[in-house]
Length: 420
Image 1: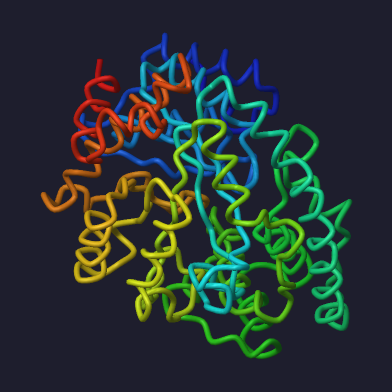
Image 2: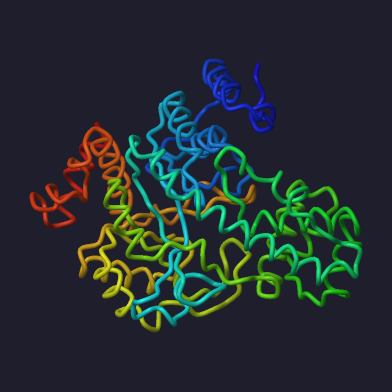
């Protein structure tokens, strides 16, 4: 019998996929009760996550998802493994990538949009990447990944300025880079840096009371009762991830350096997305109250100027808006859905999976108000299949939009492609 720990720890892609086949054949990998749950925003080890692409698909199936979508930062390199894992388990999949983009030259250039750390820069997603375009997208990201590492090294220097007095220092090459899959197309994110810092803090101050005392008494960080309980438990299997959440919430503003060279200009990446037949999606964040992931402070974002936001992304040529039903209030979500209808924008759901504490399932998808997000996922699957055969058959090609100008009619057509 193959165990999941072996799949979790295996570093070789071919061996991982073989382990997945063995798990499937043994009957050890059983899906949870069937559902219509979907998730199009699962991070893997190619950006930051505890899960390889194969393990992510296995976890998705065990959780009860009927489809799963990969979404790594500045990387599409895990897509082939993700697709093959889906075939092995008989699960429908979608592939995509997430990146930052520079909004210079738009009405949003001086606003805090959906990026908690910087004005004038947005997070966006390229969904439904045709499989013939994977290598082209990887090549597009390559220079931006290099530029990102220049900034990453500067943030490590900022960390060392703050922490060396406490006996905690980081080396980018030795401590951060090995946590990523940079050598095979992965990207190094702020989370990698802060995870490396978390591991160093643990090595110096230990788990439990020593770590909590350092955070509260030395760094002056106020911990919630829940997080303090996690960190006082020295047998907590997710200890470094919980500490990472604290670092991201309370420290990022002190070490963050604005992203510039690593961010493609928005009109350039929208044009490139259309060229490769991907679905360009603005990632709605909305004003944050209680953070779902525990690593975002209460903060205001797009809601005060949301009409301007939708006017701008429509003018820029975005195809879609992606949002997380569990993150926002019903009022926020109703407003976003109304504006998507007004501007004929495709709506995509996804729960940002990058921590072992997160559930792959979004229970809010049981609400009838989100039934369209299930249909949209099947349409996205249909788009990816058809655009892989021929870019002109994609859901947002010029030919398809002329034939089906209304997005809701197009969703019905492509949903059928996806299901069959």
